[in-house]
Image (cartoon, rainbow, N blue to C red; front, side, top):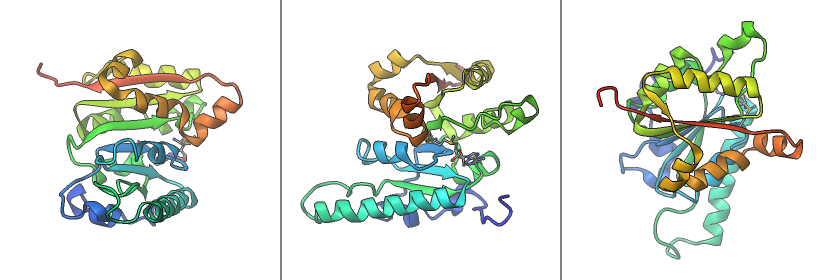
Length: 229
Ligand code: SAM
């Protein structure tokens, strides 16, 4: 249960400087959100590739979110040691990545303001196989309205799973939602998002497990569109 968790009443109440001290005073807020980030593989892979983009993982499990927090703290310290202040320009590595323990299905809009995100990731989400459990799935018509709200026009939703049925479920719901349109992998690669796609396929702990077991990976991506275009 998430009753014991303290949630910010609104995105404006979140002190992002606590999460990203190197960006304090810049007024920056997260632009990439990894929903159900697990052990943080995607964030850790993307952080050095987009050093000026703030990224936030959301993870409901206490120990797992703590693990990610510790992992980021350790990376910040070790990369600082490798690269002492003054030796490089720009923010030090991994300063742009953080995690919160949160139930994203209930509290996503408490963290992210309208149109603040350019990428939203749902990587290998829990499948909830039985039909009576489908309402527990992280993609649903109600939640899609929230995802559209926090994404800016042009922003991308990345989904991937090894469960064909869940892939069809996510794809169908997103396709039928008026504020999203499907965008194929090659188009995203042509737009320069190839490193993101590669990370979506291979960087997460769950994605690595699927690869070890020889499973399939089903990718589906969608662009947030403007209603009145
Ligand atoms: N994305 C990671 C990966 O690819 O390795 C983790 C995949 S794991 C199968 C699904 C994760 O979503 C779990 O770590 C789980 O705790 C988390 N999760 C499930 N429901 C959630 C929710 N409502 N809010 C936040 N995280 C959630």
